[in-house]
Image 1 (cartoon, rainbow, N blue to C red):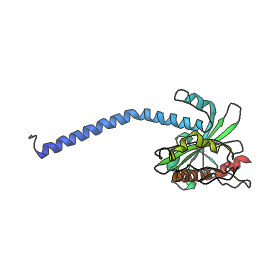
Image 2: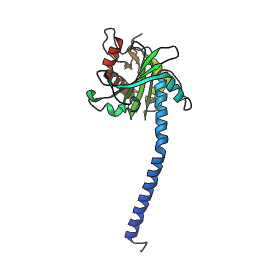
Image 3: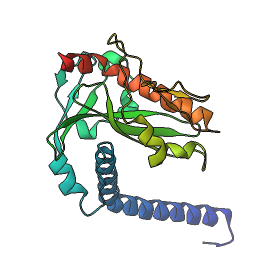
Image 4: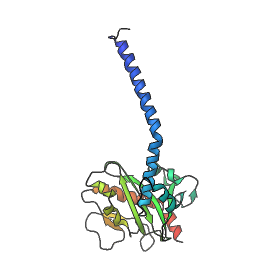
Length: 233
């Protein structure tokens, strides 16, 4: 075959594309278990972070097994459903009508014997997805801890949601008011009211990310409203 012909070039290019695609597919398949393991580790670390337990890749499994005593799925009525809470994709689930959503719940017991409820969060920031976990004390209202992360928020601005200084503001805040009405937690750009248990400081210069996080809290936690109220009884 004439190597200078168009037919040869087309055949050569086609074979090259097929070979490269096959190699990339094999590499992707072989790396999938490692990728899934890393995702599992990161997720368990985030869940532990929400109850102020710091872990690393070496001890995350033992700490998770020690402190997370239960996990399950509920519906918007607070009724338990069948399934594995850990493998629920909350981001995709939030696209469904609330009646069809499967809501993961984690329960933990700390060294002092106190129990915490942990709820996952998923939302949208300025440039991409944001997510996190928030834990509550036995009153199912007061925040014990919170951790947030992001995919591509602006460095030095929106990415501050992933810093301890920002996250610690949420400790002690409440999502129900004195009349047991769900009000969530607001991120206030201007000076917030002193001792307001439903407000935290927004990120300076990160308005859209702050708005996205506030919306994430309200949308996600409202789905658990009945569940949390029923636990108070």
